[in-house]
Amino acid sequence: MKAIEKLNSANNSGKYICVGLDTDPKKIPSHLSSHKKPVIEFNKKIIDATKESAAAYKLNLAFYESEGVTGLENLEETLSFIPHGVLTIADGKRGDIGNTSNLYARSIFEHFKFDAATLNPYMGQDSLEPFLSYSDKFNFILVLTSNPGSADIQKLQLKSGEFLYQDVIKKIHSWNKNSNCGIVFGATNLTELKENISIIDDLPLLIPGVGAQGGSLEDITSLLFSQKKYSYLINVSRGIIQKSLDENFAKAAKDELHNLNWVVSRKLQ
Image 1 (cartoon, helix red, strand yellow):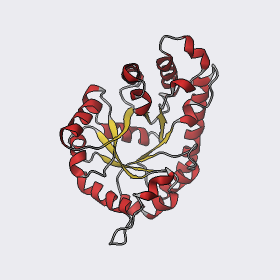
Image 2 (tube, rainbow, N blue to C red):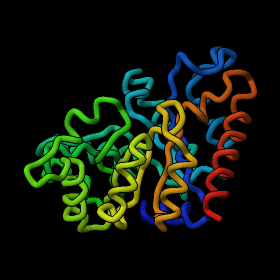
Image 3 (cartoon, rainbow, N blue to C red):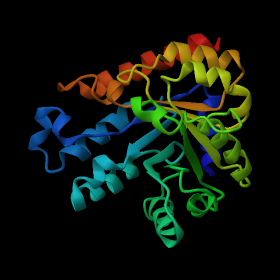
């Protein structure tokens, strides 16, 4: 099953919330410390509680790579818990030249068998091509992010009068030969999202920044549905997986995902 088919299947079922498994070993319920693999126990329970309602799972690679060999083993085992029909995203914001990019792509798509990756476009098309050549996979390319420093580069104004991030969107369309490109657009940039819907056109969206970073789920979904934009994922990490750090953490995550899906469904109607 192609990655885009998994995304379409989720969206067609009214699922738009991507669960971010950004699992910090220092921020999981204390009662799990007695387990041999606390992160694995935590992730498995979160996935079991949310897999029926999640549109996708995004794993920020930093939370796993920072733990060395143990973290990479946790990453691989966590992926085995996610149902085959649910989209998995490796959030590493990769993008490098030559054989390095080839190896990054092979690691993410062949070894770990993720369905999708996040990519940084600022080294140009050749740095992304190894990822784009996997026609059955998907790539969310950074356009305008939610962090305060995003304006330092992404909003630089070009001689044409356009902002750099707008030019990146146009380039992504030209790179999308295998129909496996989407974009990352931060939820805190609501005005810019509205102004660029026509440029974005049919590119699927991965939208981080809802919740802890200040983005509004209600505002984002209202805008997208009003513009008849139905191909997107809204990532929520801490707001779901850290909803509770007590023994009921899995149920709390399930309930929060249910609440978020309810908000989306109201806007969809």
